[in-house]
Length: 483
Image (cartoon, rainbow, N blue to C red):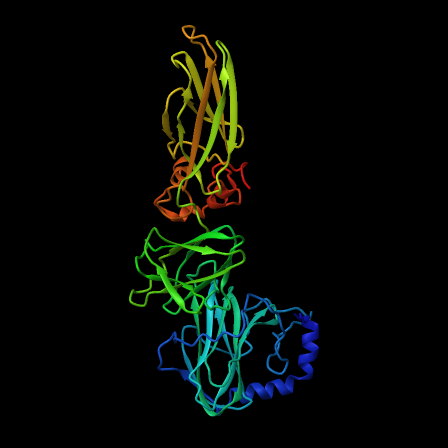
């Protein structure tokens, strides 16, 4: 990346000013004819993107023979007055026709972006004997930065997509081969964009991290396709889910199979797909508009992708064995943990086997979370299943079951032996809005299981979203509790 100081630019450009003036004059002489095209815009151009442009990267000074700097004052500083374009100014959202282009010709035009947007610059309509390259540049305080160049073979369409901040921009087109040729060019500007742009091509797909991702996206046009890639960190199952409740059937969710074919997965709110993966396996997915439905850029899809929440109960058994004499107390405990962070304690089953009469036997079972905080107490002297209300407990993580047995039956004072198995059942949290936040967590923290958007909200303004806090087992409503 090369940064050129204004003084160096001025010296260099003054030495080549005559040459640059001649080239600009040739590019805009009567030999070429520019006018709005009769073709509709935006054009469904072939998306042959040869680079992945990012704002201000890579930085590269444009050829001195093409552009000149802004006028500088006597104190060698840039004027704070209105911007003076380096080339003829055109509008965005218009497809222009340029006639009479020639081999070696260079064609420069200026456009302004007023809001943060995804800008798609295109050059189309080349005949079989014509070959152009297309670049998009930005002028920042007198220095010209290359944001992206498309140089496809022969007469293939040229497309450059880039996130553009408010500022001054240029189309710069070079004719590799042309004989009085006609081309069409323009720029489509979309301001209603999601945070994963520009992921409109497979080469520019957005990478999603482990263990689980919640994505909110939209399509600003029927040409917008969102590509994502996920790499499994371990062997197991992952979930792929799409929620299109805002505008049913507007989107089609697909994955790339081993034959390189995009395979439709599913559509609809609350639907999901479970896939077995190996360690390091790459999973490519995309969300594309359903062209049978009118695209509404104000509507959003929700996609989740990553480590699968368990689909079945996991049972952990601890057995208390021993004996207790009259007026004695015996304490036992065992600790278990769910197999993943997405499991919660669902139920407790106690099936005691105590010798002799149990009328004088007292058995208490207390449950503690990973912070040694007691969150439930039960009697265990008789067979019983206790179902935990999923909206009433703190997410326990590991669970320690502590049992106290006291023998107080004077009518049968002999020592009593006992075997008391306790089964802790873990299972998938209920998640009605498919935002990776279980129902009990949303109910406990004032969130809604009918609004998937609240997973990305930072309720306590501590810099972490509610979903991040859930995964870290911290409180989304306490700014002092965060990852």
